[in-house]
Length: 615
Image (cartoon, rainbow, N blue to C red; front, side):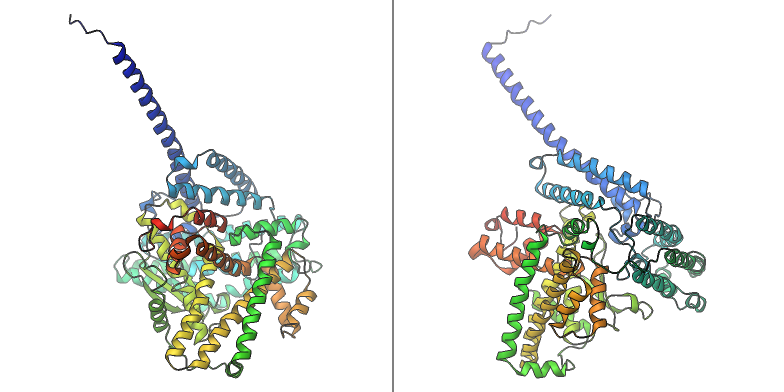
């Protein structure tokens, strides 16, 4: 038996110290990995659960769900259910508690930022869930009765599975509308049903969006767009002509036996809820309406400012814009004559593609390039049958993993040519929604960012950006007109920018007046009269739209003002290192966020560590 040498005290002490150091390192690594692993698990579960519970949302988020571990799913059109809503609330509370138990310093920087965003989003979601029947899914202005058909009509067919999923979702519309009607009945029982006049508007939409006559003659947009989306699959030999015909037959059957009866049943059910004694009024007229509105402002705009501060912010901006308009009109009286003519026939570009090309060239100096290859873009006219239900223009958001082909839809019945088309294309295309979406999606994929980030939506970040660059486009248009010797038109373009800003500011102020201060129709009409709106029907239309769409205008305009405020803060923090390019890079690289989190991130941002403005 071999005899071992005795261990010296010094050796033993070294071993103990080494063992202690090793143990500390193991504990540290375990602690670090524990938080990271828990965050991995929570975010993966959140993303998978949300995607699997809402196939319509998943399809617009991911082109290839299988690449994200979501190949095994059943097509589901998410329906309302009171018990399920309570279970979801409990699950959110548990998730929030689990997230709050994590230590941000143990996570990577992107994960720590995502943690902050998730916590704030869940806190706000839970706060809103207290107001069970304050939401309005059937708003006449933009309710599910008009939005769902558009989402179905634009549902892209990339493969056979997409067609099968689409038809499965179409087959569930009756159950979906039944659940919405149940929610409205519960709202009525709680004394929170929408005004009778609004319910009648919704019923009229139900009667006209899907009609037996249109389906019988094959002219309905859900028939024509279905055929149009199948054609590329046949051309690409993904499906045969015979299979396409079978799919068309199935679509016809579901439209006539499921969709049409679903709209009829919804409209009939709403008749029983109509109460003409319930008159249009803002959220402030409801028992806890002010509290709900304050929370809704956070959710829709991403701004955490109190409503009173927002009102002051808007009032100051209104005064600035009014002053600029007065100054321009006094210095350049020829502008008044030009506005009277309203003649944009001589605008240098008539074609949307030319306008987008010009916008892309003019933005290069102040905005970072898109990662990867240039994104293709098609400008399409909205189908005539869809025009009454569509916005003047919209960008069809591309999925996280398919950003090469993009589409902007123009509603020709609502969008004129010239300057307005140019600035609209900036809002929807470059440097607006299309550019911002493609930039984020490509950057997120390249950086390996968690897909759970796609669950977070911030109206102020997205729509605020679109308004921010839209106003920049007025400057681009003025440059373009000056280059073409149209000085008066160039001055008018700058005036139109202030006029547009003034209008959005005024409507945002009215949103707060109506929903937070309980302003009446007469008070709004009196205010509009001060700005030349004498027609009572116009005032009523503006009032009703804002009543039906709380926080819609602030989502755009307050988001814009928050970006301006953030930009000014960046100027102060960065000093001589500030450029618009670097600010835009910071904003875009931060990704969709609330403005409180953006401000915190800005204050921790090290601009001196950037090379040519890039982190």
